[in-house]
Image: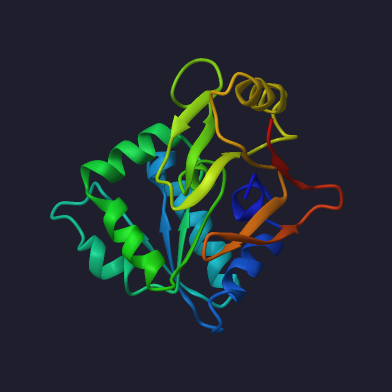
Length: 209
């Protein structure tokens, strides 16, 4: 998701409902990863409120508990893993420290639905367009579960679009995808399946130079 979902549109859960439908069951187990947002209790509470309304069984993974949770057991028991927005660089650094990328890859290979908004969408691609690594918007290497690059908030932040275009023109970022706030890409087995929107004018774009 470029933007939207429960964190930006609490009264319009169309994108979140779409994510849940991909699990193929009405009472899906959904785990929230809020590391990009500093594991904000308020953000996590809003996740529980929204996904309880959708008839799911919500849970969340914290990397700050003592003793730590069994991340592998928790994540592989889910139908959906949903990653919140925030700081992409910090998200990936925490995940690497806790060896989560290998667990998430195992979840992906098992067919567990992986979803996320903003930083939580950036993370799945080879590269992301983000303001989390430097004062200016720039490119950041990500997990590479999906091919190419991704730019969230394409219409929601004034510098996103021109910066992505410049990075492409300079050859500093791979061709990829950009999503307006309220737009989401659905990939199946690494291939783009469709674009889903929750706002009338929201769009998804495929960009190359």
